Structure formats: C-alpha cells, structure tokens
Length: 61
Length: 161
Image 1 (tube, each protein chain N blue to C red):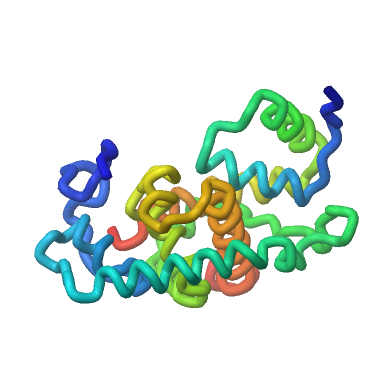
Image 2: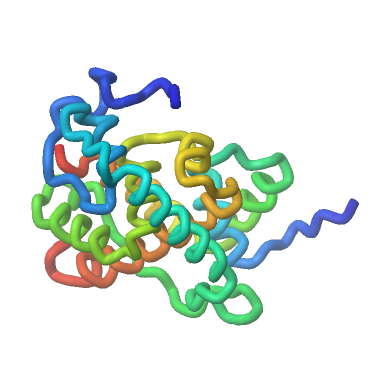
C-alpha cells in the first residue's frame, strides 16, 4: 500500500479540523505530525483551532 | 440520544443563559431548557435543516478559496499573539457572536451543536441525518470561516491589542 508521507496544507487543514471531531488513523496522525513540524502556517492554524474551541467553551458564560 | 454531557448535566453549561445563538433550533434549546420546547415547529425545522445540510455538503469541493490548485495555502494566517488574553474581553465575545451570526445557518447550527452543546459527531449525524463525512466537512468549513472572521474583525484590529 502506498501512503504518501507528504500532504498539502489543504489536507493538513482538514485533518486539523477532523481530529477535533474524530480520532485520526495512525497514518493520518503521522502525516499531520510531520507536516506540522515543517509548516508554520498550519501550526498557526492548529493553535487557532484550539483557541476557537476554548473560546466557544466560554461563550455565554 | 444519550451521551454523557447532556443539558440536565450540572457540569459545563449549567447556569449559562442567553445569548443563545439563533441557529440553535428549538429542539436543541429543549435539551438545555426543557421548558422552552416548541413542539409544533420541530418536524419542519428538522427537515429544512437536513436539506440545507445536504446542500452545504454538496458544494464541498467548490469552497476552498483558501487554497491554490496545488493545495497550498494562498495567504499566510496572521499570528494571533496571545489569544488567551482575548478571552478576558467582553468585546471579543461580541465579535465571536457576530461571526457565528454570519455563518450560513446550517453551518452555524452544526457548529453550535458540536462546540457549544458538546454533542458527539455521531449524535449530530443522527440528528441531522447526514453522513459522518458531510459532518466533518461542514465543521471544517464552519471553523475556517470563523477563523477568518475572527482574524479580520478582531485579531487584525486594535480590539485585540
């Protein structure tokens, strides 16, 4: 089976969101981890997604 | 629909009141505030949202203007600095609420179910009658739009400073 290790930012963005809703598979997790190590843009968006979740927890408090 | 953290749960969400987002339909409100349930409107509201949801999901591939053809991001997301500080500001929550209000209704609803009412995605799928894949894509789209909206209307402005 061929699992390309490199994913695009678009795929990485989808995985960033998906992992807030479902557990990622091993391959997905590994490819995302690898991408995030080298991509500043996606790492930024990753932190922003976490922030969005914490903001939603506080909404209406 | 079971699930650990429902409305009757005294944990998170208890004691919270309005402002409730308008996209959270009566049946969701009922989960939180049983006295607020409006039985007459339920079937119609549900049908409408499901159709909406299907339509949203269908245009999945057309949306991504964030990315160039090759899947690379077209523009650099801003550095948000220390966003936690924003959580101390009531103005930030006004902006967040306004951004939620600007989402297409079906995206707002599914996002609120997931992130505010804390439903599992499986519960959401069942309730809205959509596939998990559609569900994930809609949540993705809601998050990306909100990210963009917060960036433009809060983090890129003096409000966040």
